[in-house]
Image 1 (tube, rainbow, N blue to C red):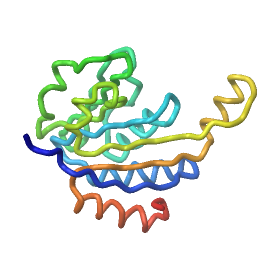
Image 2: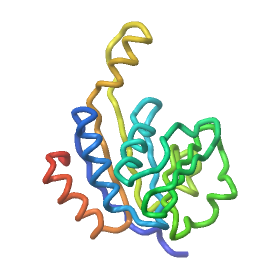
Image 3: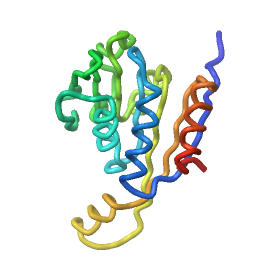
Image 4: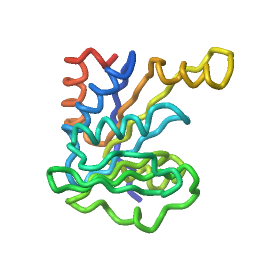
Length: 177
């Protein structure tokens, strides 16, 4: 029995949407066809917003929307690669399509990979976003608070050299801690 590959991680602080855009730009530069990236975090943590920003940096040719009810949306990129955007929130087992590696002409982004732990272990990169919600008030006030709240992030992956390159870029932007 082989032991699992070690996982390396970095974390940081996002003070708002501008920092989330910077993070999307940095991460997008490290993604290649065939890669699979997980997006973890509670509801409203910013996973789909991150995908929208990432897709913009990758020159998506179609607008990004949440795949919660469709399970998967595909977006062609100007480079000829396809961006797959999956949402496993409502699932407890792995869709058959995800049992195969992403093709070299596909970048696969998967929200809620932790819902299917055997899949989460196959990811090349995992981003976790978290928001600390403390105020009391109406649902509308809470929604506005969450939209503008600072976030913590963590990136983990089995490749320490790629992670170190990401860390250097995040440090340069003042995002890592």
